[in-house]
Image 1 (cartoon, rainbow, N blue to C red):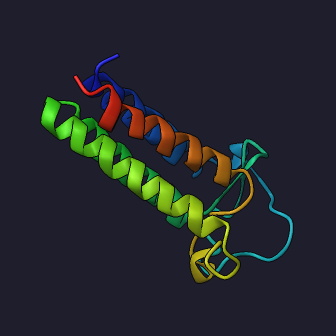
Image 2: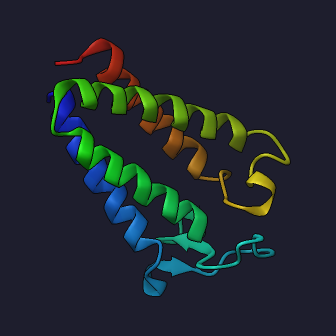
Length: 131
């Protein structure tokens, strides 16, 4: 798979995830208190903690990926940016106090391995297999 195709596919996946997070039937009630945003807070598919801010971030990543898929250089920069950003989100999710960005968005739980996996895959397309 080319880096351009990776950017397009990941952009589409982020778009689906971002939209799904706003569909009440796909978001189970979360255990514990609501985050500061409070909007659309729950567990996407009963697995991944989400809220409106994280859904919005996923939607921005989607638009960026779809726009970047139009050129090899832009796709490589997208892959590098997503690799770095998702790695940072993973690290933040491991640190108490940063794991919810001060109540703004959930970076903990199953989001840890998901963001780590996205970071690793994006790093592969950014620095190892960029074509």
